[in-house]
Image 1 (cartoon, rainbow, N blue to C red):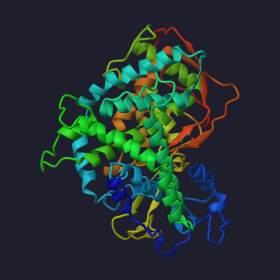
Image 2 (tube, rainbow, N blue to C red):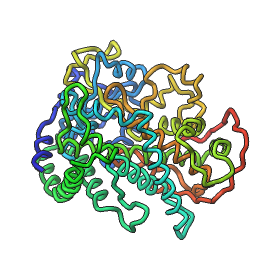
Image 3 (cartoon, rainbow, N blue to C red):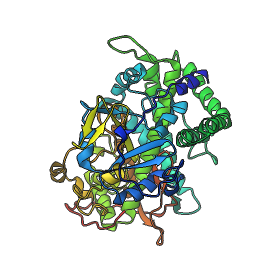
Image 4 (cartoon, helix red, strand yellow):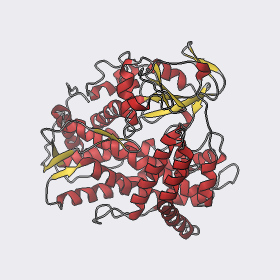
Length: 491
């Protein structure tokens, strides 16, 4: 716990004054609370997406003493993604997660040495050769999901709940060879609950830091969740200690324990290894479960896209609905991958990331920025920028045909972040998602509830809420895959 408190004590407070500039805002600003009354504290990102529709390319909200500046167009994002001028920074909500994740890859500051060390050590864990070792784990967990579904008393399943189980199991087994029993236990593993509550608490603390009495409220929340955090810390620390002399495991934990930096000989400390494990579990399972859930929503509500996905899976996997793809076959599910990409365009599960300048500069030739200013890139708006995307609310996977991608400006699609601080596990998430989707549509027909309208909620990431589908086992028929779709369903 002492190490965690030391990490939490170090914080980068960015002024975000933007040289006194005032950007468009909702216009109902009150003394002390600012724009708090126009924002839903339970779903702040969804509030911003709604409010920002009429506010232009750059706008602001002021919550108590904290100023948030949002960027909504691909043109400005292209500048902010220039690594020679800008870098990642942690907005208040993510900075507050340091109490949970310390200097792990997701929550580390750019100048912390453990970020570079962990990045260099773990990059080989996501090469193509390493991905082959995770492939069998992904197949096994997907198989368990289907067995779980087949054993349920009903064929109507909760998509987001079960995708979260699947991605948590896949990551825990790949990261440190631990089975959480998601498909065999009637209740979630205590570690999962402790982790989720710890994250929720840290996020709440990020939201109240600048409120009157915010420090006191933060201390109360920390005290309230201390037992959960200590329990999760102890479980991981015991696991790390037990594996300290074990060189037989080649999972992510094995790499962190047994591999030294090739140039400096440095190794990660046990406490930083704990932070890295938490980073992978938190950032990895939430984002991928959301991506899978949104893609299944769009497939289930766009019959033509689902039909093409099933034809593609049938053509590659054959007539047996229980056939499993080889590692090399996963990259051949090109239409299914486009469905995933298009889902992440409309509903990026990580809804925003922040950037700050390396030196004082002017953004877009109009907006001066100092080194302690920062902007949040709102991906839900950037990915719908009408200057880039025709009919942006329409779901159309063929936007991601190679010839269409070449037409678009750079940095108009950024679901995994940008630059050196982009998601290190991107290939892991994409491989797992395409594999699961291909197996799922090959084995089942999907029917959503007739009266369901997409309801998006915020956890650490964005996910569909109360989205159920009815599954029907199918017999695949091998047919040629058509070359074009005419999807029209909007998100």
